Image 1 (cartoon, helix red, strand yellow):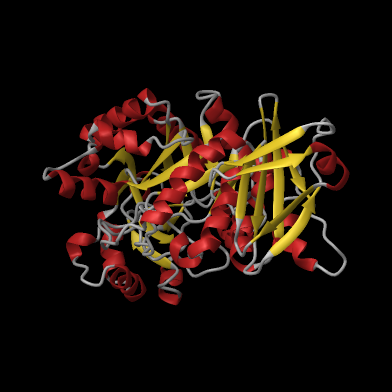
Image 2 (tube, one colour):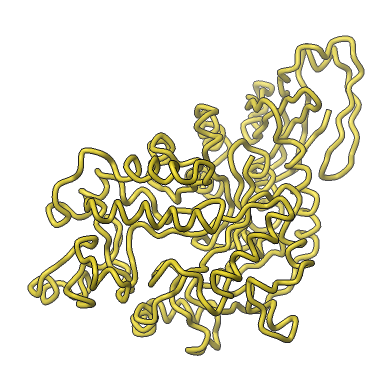
Amino acid sequence: MTVLYEINTLVWLGELSHRHGRPVTLGDVPGEVWDSVALPGVDTVWLMGVWERSPAGREIALRDPGLVASFREALPYVTGADIAGSPYCVRDYVVDARLGGPDGLAAARAQLAARGVRLILDHVPNHAAPDHPWLTSHPDRLVQGTAADLARAPADFLEAGAGIYARGRDPYFPPWPDVVQLNAFSDALREATVETLVSIGDQADGVRCDMAMLLMNDIFEKTWGDRAGTAPAEDFWLYVIPRVRARHPDLLLVAEAYWDREQPLQQQGFDHCYDKRLYDRLLHEDADSVRAHLGADPAHQRGLVRFLENHDEPRAAAALPGDRGRAAAVAVATLPGATLWHEGQFEGRRVRPPVFLTRRPQEPVDEPLRDFYESLLPAAASVRRGDWRPLTPTGLPDDRTHHHLLAWTWTHAEARHLVVVNDSDRPARARLPLPWDDLRGRACRATDLLTGAVYDRDGDELTDFGLFVSLEPWGCHVLEW
């Protein structure tokens, strides 16, 4: 199963350059650094932000009070040299020369491939930079405005290239100030998107598509109405993805997706879609809510991306501190589907730098947390094989604490595993009915892959009553039977 590791490429290379006392680009990252990236179980590295950023977008960002405030909050002594512009304000899909250019990326891909790791890169289908060549050469690929629009709503439109264009947006928030809106209903854009994705597929093994649901016909029509023209009969991704796969059949396609659009996007061809619902439930709701979410069709769940942080979300160490974060990490690491880890997560970084920045503040390493992840990643890699099955804990009538427990099994011809997580701040007890019908008459031994603890149990008791578990607040078991 896919395990992704996201790296903020510009920041990462800057820190490597400082550490080694020389400029480090993608083409000359030391081998031992690539070794440290190819973590146990990680099979895909996402180098976030490798494309040419927009100078015009950077200038807009520097004049935006809200963005400047966010830069200072993350990096109190920020200077202009620390601000590179947004990697999601793409001027051109060419690897930035500062990062090593196309040759540097090819070398990085080769280094990862030698370690059995795939490479994925970003694509931003909804918007482009205000100095993107299309604003002059292909204005029909964008949502256009008029002088009257610009005078009436200067925050929603900008004058650039060959005309006046709408700023990029989604239907629920104000426009992003530094980008212009692409037109998902334009035949010319759809064809150009195919060619862009094919080009990325020439350079990488997969693509993470930013805000992929915004291009779906119904959402785009809701956002732009008549300004975008008539919706084509075929949805955007139904047009694009088959044509890309004709050229790159094995290209891994990952969608950033919200608003319950995960399943439709899977049906339209994406391999994996963000599971933001699980993230929100782990942060803000209880175990019953998480359990209900995990009752979805297993085939759908295999197409989800489980995560506790990424470049858009707060750092997990800040949002889910201590044992609570460890419990949540055990959950996302051992569920079906893809898992997304974020560089710095294992070391307990708490500051999420805006993606505009070239550097981030120094933070101490949380050594116990790093040790925990060093145990969790190989454990998760060994667990997630075979058939996954969620369990429903049971308890005594006067003990409701079993509701706080999450549990599931993985059954493979060569191994059986049970994962139990106490998703609460109080002790919890339960009986867990195991799905293995051949335990009777056996002596059974379980070893916790996180702690090394060993538990001997009688197979008859496990068959008749289930496994009794008792966990402290936010406690976990990852048991190999």
